[in-house]
Length: 137
Image (tube, rainbow, N blue to C red; front, side):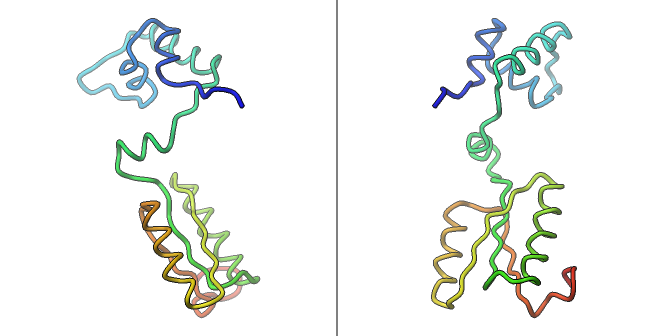
């Protein structure tokens, strides 16, 4: 397994501080400007090194996981359609879903606790009683 490229690796390559790289990547320009040539150099290094942001680190800083816990009692045609619709809408808004399927009532509390432990930003209960055809009512 290859070592993950960090923001520090990009900063070293470009001979700038990690905070400068962060400001460029997060498009933060308030009270701070980065010269266009430095910005281009950073973006080129990001691409060449294959840098990808760390969602866990971002969640710790922002106190948002960008994850929604979705609970369904079982998977069938109606719940699958509902989950698919929820996932589409979440991804469109920058969120991921964390799916929990629980067939027995005693599994519900444990599933909720796992989602709370993961600090999801919201919980959604999908029930066949609230579905109609291909869309969520």
